[in-house]
Image (cartoon, rainbow, N blue to C red; front, side, top):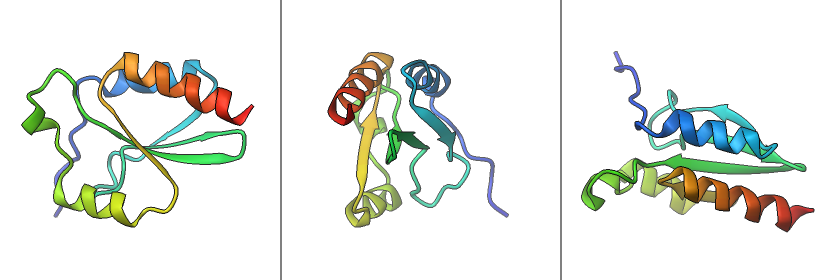
Length: 99
């Protein structure tokens, strides 16, 4: 039996900031096996988003083996966000790029 997925301490704040920018968010953190924490959508595009806790040591923020494998095989948009500030900048880039 699989244990419950752990989310990073900044997970809910990052989700909140993305939603505030008008980007839809589906939390997929419980899927596991390297699948990203979030699937986000804006103006007909879909983005895979992995959340890492920027307050942790760099070695603790690395993608796991399954996450690296997913990232390498994913042919769509994929990003890693570590802070709310990064999330806000990403949202600005996404919304300006598309509109």
